[in-house]
Amino acid sequence: MRLLLPALLAIALPLHAQKAAKTKPLIKLTTTEVTTKDIVYKTTPQGELKLHVFSPKGEVQTTVQRPCAVFFFGGGWKSGTYLQFVPQAEYLASRGIVAISADYRILNVHKTSPDKAVEDAKSAIRWVRGHATELGIDPTKIIAGGGSAGGHLAACTALTSAYDAESDDKSISSKPNALVLFNPAMNISTLFKERSTGEGPMTQEMAEAITPNSFITKDTPPAILFFGTADKLKAGGDEYVKKAAELGLRAEMWSAADMPHGFFNKAPWTQVTAKKMDEFLISLGYLGGEPMIKLPENAPALKHEN
Image (cartoon, rainbow, N blue to C red; front, side, top):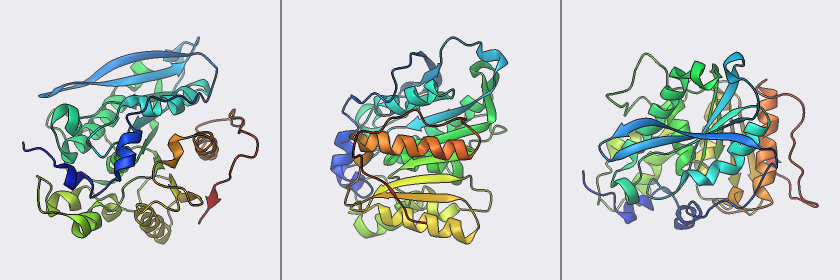
């Protein structure tokens, strides 16, 4: 397979978003100790892929069916690391959810293109649902989340039908039951038409097949989306929310005034968006009580746009 050229990657995601994904997380959203383990969920021609699992500590998991959140990191399908969503995963584990930050194939490591990333994201959700008993989770309460390209992948698990791995058990659904999307790329087809240089393996056909906004149906799960108002990808999020509303679906848009792409990676926005994520999951019945995050003094507020 030919490499996906940097010029093509720029079609969907700004460079600073790709750089942000390389930075190790420094923000701690909880001081509660949680249990961690790594599980190989898929072996590809390019190597093994792991799920980095964060679970509530000190309880017998086999007797408790908990919701499960699976996060996908950002980086333009080119770079990035599971470490990006460790803060959110640790926090949700401290609240009683089994949370996972997933590996998937990327250009810089595996020399692959976005279709393989979509395939891996679907495989991850299927593996989690198929191993619900082992993980101690409720297979009807799986949350897919992620940022930027990872948010796009999470949305693809819920919406797109293309690019299923041959090795996947297709009898197990890859569709999550809820979506938590941090500035996701939702309108890949439009971006391709506007910015394509004609180089690389991406085609219009592939772009259309991995455009979440094209596949919204009445069965699409509830979603919460976070965007900075200065993010050019917000237009795709706005389009998603509008289409969802027309079908009577729940799709919340929360915006940060004047903030750029990837704003949620920095304090205090990491805390602000995580608290709103918690409130969303409470509203779905996936969490109880109140959020445990204490916001910094004079923390900015998100605006509910719909």
